[in-house]
Length: 416
Image (cartoon, rainbow, N blue to C red; front, side):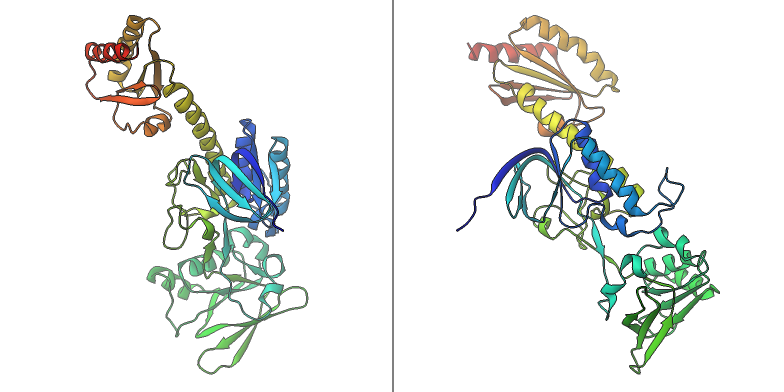
């Protein structure tokens, strides 16, 4: 017997509970929007696996990533954010009302913030799962380099990220041993990085190798490589291993709706807006250059703020701009533009002329063009005339107050 799903309504649904998602939820909650954060696994995301965070501003004592994300969760709850630990099964983001489906519940939302992050690509070698993250296998030199001061580390990979991160590790580690898939001297990175790495006295290379297995009692102490030419096993003693063979964004369920790169990262603008109105993305799930807690928090702040503005503009658009009580005039202008400011005087005269028979609105697009976008207006100043909640006329560019009054007189006659 099938069980009927519950249906719950929210202003904001945040999918993903890492630093980006929690920051977005904090901003939305503080704006008194009804907000829920859905996370399928671990609130805090990949940051929770970092033993020492040395580069997040305001935390000089190198706390664990988990300590920072726990404070974020506590703060979000203080702002009224609800948390739900479950997997999102499907989404329908294209309508004005967004639909997020879990196993037991259908969430209807005015806005959705995608913060599902990514996961490191792993080698799938024997025993790998026993040493991931805090037990010897890391994926972020920027996060964990300092913890490897005067230690021996193994780097897997020879692309730009692997070699550049390996070079960074040499500032701290006493020895960096790189496993390279190719013949001696050949790497997947750019030529400048390759030459710099080959000259670095702290870096050495094991050519024509892949990882066969990982070994260690409780913590990794040996990476066993396999020679691709001879099939010989090459045990490499180390303190830790860094894998730099790429990341996989967690975007599969959004693929047919949200615009992405070929690698599956979500494309946004600087406001964290996706190609779908009311849908935002933030953090490691975005197509971006630097993936760190600090940049995730910045993304989340923008996404949360943008969601708040979107909801406010939606309410303005439907309840004020497209009101049905009387004919409407909406003046869309940019406050920094002299021509626009000057025409405000004419708008006031028009308003006085009709003495309450029309609804007059003034929309400044200096900080946000959301209302203008909904009205398909991209040039300013502009006047939009509406009747019974529908756009009757768009007047753009050179505005003539006399002509606007003439058109409004005609509309008012129709409405009698």
